[in-house]
Every structure is written in C-alpha cells, then in structure tokens.
Amino acid sequence: MIPGLPYAEQLPERVGVLVLGSGLAGCAALLAAAEAGQYAVMLEKTSDIGGSTVKSAGLSAFAGTEEQSAQGIADSVESLRGDLLNTGRHLSDERLVDLYCEHQLETYRWLRSHGVRYGEVHAASGQSVPRSHPTDTTAMLVHLLRAAGRLGARLVMEAPACRLLREGGRIVGAEVEAPDGLRRVSADAVVVATGGFSQNSELLTRFAPQMDDALRAGGSGCTGDGLLMGWQLGAGIVDTPHIKGTYGHYFEPHPHEDGTGVLAVYKGAIAVNREGRRFVDESLPYKEIGDAALAQGGTTTYQVFDARVLARTNDEVAIYDFAGRDRAGMLVKADTVAELETKLGIPEGSLVAAVTDYNDRIVAGERDPLGRRHLSGGVGSPFALEQPPFYAHPSGTVVLATYCGLTVDARLKVVDVFGEPIERLYAAGEVIGGFHGAGYMTGTSIGKAAIFGRLAGTHAAAEESEREW
Ligand SMILES: Cc1cc2nc3c(=O)[nH]c(=O)nc-3n(C[C@H](O)[C@H](O)[C@H](O)COP(=O)(O)OP(=O)(O)OC[C@H]3O[C@@H](n4cnc5c(N)ncnc54)[C@H](O)[C@@H]3O)c2cc1C
Image (cartoon, rainbow, N blue to C red):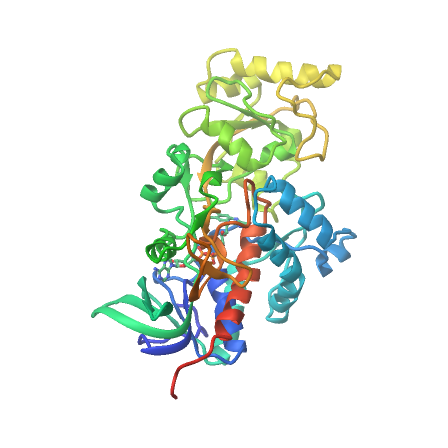
C-alpha cells in the first residue's frame, strides 16, 4: 500500500464514473472525471497500482514542451503528426492521431500542474527530433491518484471486473469478483483502462503467433480482460497484425534486469545471431530489429561492441546504461573478438569475420550489405569496432505492449463491429487499437494513456446521471 492514496475498503454499489485499471490511462481518467465533479471510482485487479505503466521506461512523446525549449530543441505539432503517420505507415486511424496531436500539449501541462516532472529529453525510435520525455511513472500515478482522492475519488484494490453490464442498449456498470462472490457496481459510465495482453499467452498466440519465441513483460494483470469484456458486447478490434516485440532485452531472468533492455546498436554496436552473423540494419526501429531477431530462431542474439561504444553509456537513460549492465555482470567481456566468440560459443572464426568485414567496409567507405548508413534512424555515423575490451549483451525480443485493441471513436467511446457506439462505454490506453497503425513511435504508449485517459474520463463524466442522491 502506498501512503496517501485514496483506498476504499468496500466496493461501492453505485458510482458516477467507474474506471477499470490503475495504469496511467485509468489514473488520468479517474482524475479527469473527479475534476468534472463526478463520484469516480477505480477498480484494480491486482494488489499493486500501475500495471505496465510502472514497469515501463517512462518515456512520453510530447512536442513543444518547456524541457525541449530549455534544451534548444525545435519541435512542432506538425512534425509530431508527420512522424506519427509515417511511423504507422499511414495505417493508423488519423482521427486518433489528430486527437493525440490536438490534446498532447494541454495534457502535458495538466500533468505538470499536478506535480509530474520530466528529465532530459532525448531522441528515440520514430522521432525526427528528440521528444522522449522521461519521468518516474510511479510518482506520476501517485500525484494523479492523490489529486483525485482530494476530490472524493476512490480506489479499490484486488477487485477484478469480469463483465460489463448492459441494459436498455447502454452500459450500466460492471460485475466484479469480490472476496464474497460476484458483485455488481452500477455506474453512469464506464472507462475501460485495463491495459494490453502481453501477459496472456493464449491471446498472443491467437493474434501474434510470430511472437511465440519472444519474451514477455508488462504488468501481471495485463491479460486482455478489457478486450474480452468489450469483445463480448460486440466491440471491434483493430491492429492485431501489427503486434511487435522490442529488441535488446536480456534473455534470461536476472536480478538487475529492469525490464527495459539496452540498445547499444544505436550507439555503434552490431547485432549478430548465434552463428556470429549480422542479420539486420542496426539503425532500424527496435521493433523491426525485434522481428529480424525472432526470425533467427530461438530467443538469443548478441549486441557486440567495443570500449568506444561502452564509453557512450548514459546512466540516466536505462536503454543506454551499458556501464550499469557491465557492473551488474550482464555483459560478456573479452580482450579480443576471437576470445569473445569463444566465450559466446559462436562457431570459430564467424564473429571475427563479421566484425572484420564490418570494420573494413567502414574504413574503405564501402556500402554496408545490410544497408546500415547511420547509428539510429537517420542520425550518427557507424564506426569501426576496434578498441578493446570487447563486449556482448545477450539480447532477445520482448513483447512489452500489444498496441492493438478495441475500436473507439474520437470521444474514446467504444465502437462495435458495425461502427455503432456502445453507449456509455469508454476506453483508453493500451486496451485500444487504431492509434499506432503498423509501427510505434517511442513514448506514444505512455503519451496515449495520459492524453486519451484524460479525455475518456472527461467524456464519461459528461454522461447524464440517473442517480438519485
Ligand atoms: C518494460 C516496459 C517498458 C516500456 N516503456 C515504455 C516507454 O518508455 N514509453 C511508452 O510510451 N511506453 C512504454 N511501454 C508501454 C507502456 O508502459 C504501456 O503501454 C502503458 O503504460 C499502458 O498504460 P495503461 O494505463 O493503458 O495500462 P497499464 O499501465 O498496463 O494498466 C492497466 C491496469 O489494469 C489492470 N487490470 C487489468 N484487468 C483488469 C480488470 N479486469 N479489472 C480491473 N483492473 C484490471 C491491470 O492490473 C493494470 O494495473 C513499456 C512497457 C514495458 C512493459
């Protein structure tokens, strides 16, 4: 239990806005509904708040912020919109992209007004300018929940919703698994913010069998409950073909594994498979490297680099904290590439050949056969890996988030398979689809949870109440 959060012991019988799930989407929805004057109650399935949000790297994609200005970064909503559409290969629902763009800056300011603070902004996948804003996600949720609590909102833990209740053509509440059996909570509107299904193997195999060899991360409660509850009522589901894994995750459980992995490839490393061969243009988005790594079979590949790459470590950005990984004993280290090859059990001579070929082509100014021209996206120049010691980070592909989900309209109202809104049912965060299209820009899962969660809570709160107080 976190001190100061507005926990309630009992399930209420009747509320204004019922929010399912305590990740960022749910917390933003709860606070927005409470700010709109509603009696808002959140149900969380597990004994901890935060779902995948508190396990994440905490990067939010915003454009035009104070942090960017302070770092001299010129960004604009037009540039953000262009990057979102390009990253999604123009398969996203443009209404949702526009909604994100229209409300991102006011949501950023709203979060800051509630005490959320961001660190140094940096560039990541899909961003033509640096716009990944890091924050402490647990602190962020605590700020939002405390503010909601001051307005009378409440949070009930270990209260999994199992069915949405519909009467007279509209949603009237949810059925909840309580310690004493199934209980009904009536509501004027429900916001589903139950996250994705990265922890549900059966659903992953059904929608993304190509991920069967991938590792899994995310909140323990992220098993697709909201998707199934919406599905039962005829909700549409989009973007299932675009579930992707993220590259760079340590391949076995390790006490220092924080769930984020490292991306030494973006600072100069190469990626090789267990035969010691490079298999991808390492400057590609990490989701695409993830696909290429899975195609190598098994879970393990290696990011191989030298002392020059290690020196580019940044302990403030988890994915670039190479020195931290070294201290934690997660890097394989050797004085020569040949010795590294032996330690990794890679066939003799193959890693040496791969590194030699890579280095020789760079020195000769020849074209890379896999098409690598930059370190990351269109930024940075590859350099020869020749400064000992040499390192390898065992790296697999992990499903962190599922990106697909329920169809919603521009008011975040859930829409059924025929395009009809399901009255008084709203959804936000990872449980919705349509926004990312075929690709993912770093920071937009957290971004969309905050922006759409807040909007869903506001719209849900505007539903006419039928309560008699
Ligand atoms: C390791 C990792 C790193 C990541 N890094 C980033 C990043 O840097 N930037 C970014 O944009 N995205 C990142 N992501 C993805 C991002 O964290 C999530 O997509 C986002 O936080 C989802 O927020 P949410 O509120 O929709 O869901 P969640 O935060 O997952 O919250 C959903 C909550 O709903 C609860 N719940 C589920 N079912 C029920 C039910 N039936 N009844 C009641 N409660 C229920 C769950 O227990 C959970 O607490 C990362 C994810 C991981 C795992």
